[in-house]
Length: 86
Image 1 (tube, rainbow, N blue to C red):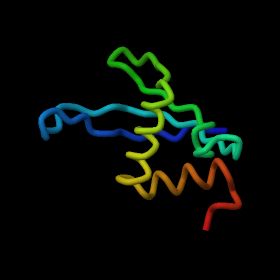
Image 2 (spheres, helix red, strand yellow; image 1 turned 30 degrees about the vertical axis):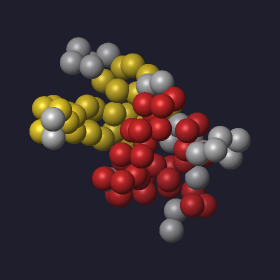
Image 3 (cartoon, helix red, strand yellow; image 1 turned 45 degrees about the horizontal axis):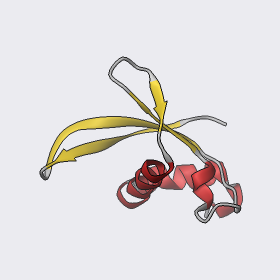
Image 4 (cartoon, rainbow, N blue to C red; image 1 turned 90 degrees about the vertical axis):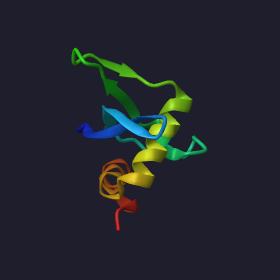
């Protein structure tokens, strides 16, 4: 399954101070309370290396994408669980 890449703004004191490049390999597993937590979610540092998020950060990142980037979220849903795509 392909990675879906997006950028999220980084805020400090209400100001955008940078962007975080995030890669999501969508997955859907009903064993999780949030089935999308089965997805691999990583960020890219300034050297291009990728690092995973802990579960609470992954939950926040997925919530931010769902809230702020509905088109990207729809792509994640469609890739993770084709029957959810509407």
